[in-house]
Image (cartoon, rainbow, N blue to C red; front, side, top):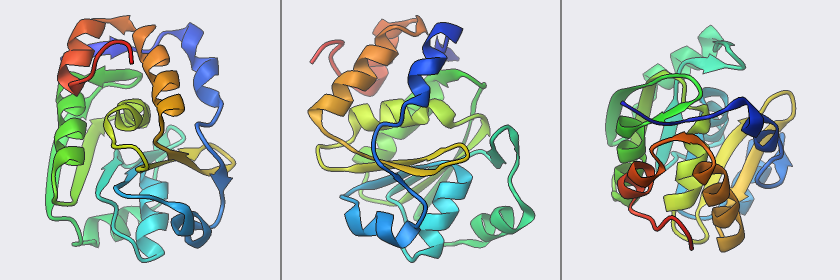
Amino acid sequence: MTVVELQESLRSELKAPLGPIYTDATELLAETGQPLITVGDVVTDHVIEAGRTPAVALVDERTERSAVSDGIARRLSAFDGFDRIQELSNPPATLSAELLSAIRTAIDDEETTLIEVDGEEDLATLPAVLVAPQGASVVYGQPGEGMVHATVDEKRQERVRDILSRMDGDTDRLWELLGVEPTA
């Protein structure tokens, strides 16, 4: 069930990265805090190839609206470093109740979790930044540029909370599923 949906008027705000952009995964990993959360197949593949298993990884077998390369798909499906794999549905440009609950549970859990999304995981960065502990790292792809490293802090959480609060849908349900207050 869709909880909130991204309207066209917010799309331009999401193009501004939530942190510095890296093209080298080793450099990026030298700067990351714990837990490390990755959103996207290519980012997750780069992090794993650089020797780190994310605490939480969200993938959808797509990159920039196309299927990921066969190499990335094979490496991710063959990787057995996650304690738990969860499959769920989340339509494009939305945040479903299932995805929101899965993100919150996975971040709170001690086990590493791969969340395989049927649909789209692009917006998962927002709730991940909001519910992750201070100092955590959320890494996601910036099309055509590289990997964005968003270190979770109050400023980023406030920016994300503002964007989420303006999405169409049931924001009361959104806050409830994430276990956060509507305002900091």
